[in-house]
Length: 237
Image 1 (cartoon, rainbow, N blue to C red):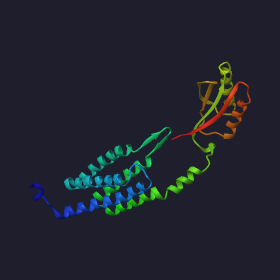
Image 2 (image 1 turned 180 degrees about the vertical axis):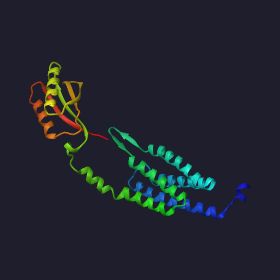
Image 3 (image 1 turned 90 degrees about the horizontal axis):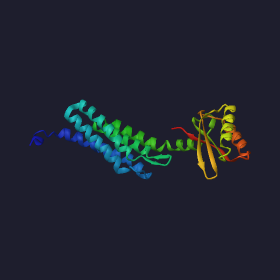
Image 4 (image 1 turned 90 degrees about the vertical axis):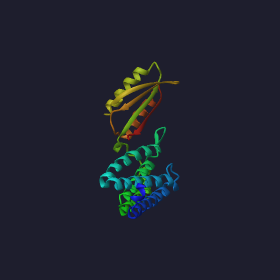
């Protein structure tokens, strides 16, 4: 009965517009994700935008701008947990970060609609679609660019495999060669292998000259006590 008495056609129309805008824009954002076969596609983004809009609209109707502000804080944190569910770790690779960020942006789009800012909601949707579409060629261009080791902050490792009997001597020689090259080792680990012991020197320097490490690795390959020598780089996050 209370619901019938408090029925307000104008507020109902306002809610309808907010939900319609949120669902439409969430569908547009989700369609791009669905087209690219991502984990969270059309329905997920549409429902996230719709739900965020509904929560914000309800908060505004109950407590005005203060209520919308309080609800927004919970929407932001709640959608963060939802986005974490689409992030997958496969070995050293992490997938789903962009999809999780898109879900977050869908929630913001819906929140704009629920707060009676449809123009801002359309603008947010346009920017999300632009970011997911027009930035892809730039990402591809950057990924295909050759890496300059001297300009890249990373973790560099020099690996030398030797016999058990020559381990201490090769360890001392490895430290000596790295010190002479001005690339001191932060630490040197030992890993038992079928063909001997692998010495793994992690360099303290965040960037190096590739030619210098090539020369050091070549020097060790020429030694009779060494069966294998190489170096590798692991980019920092």
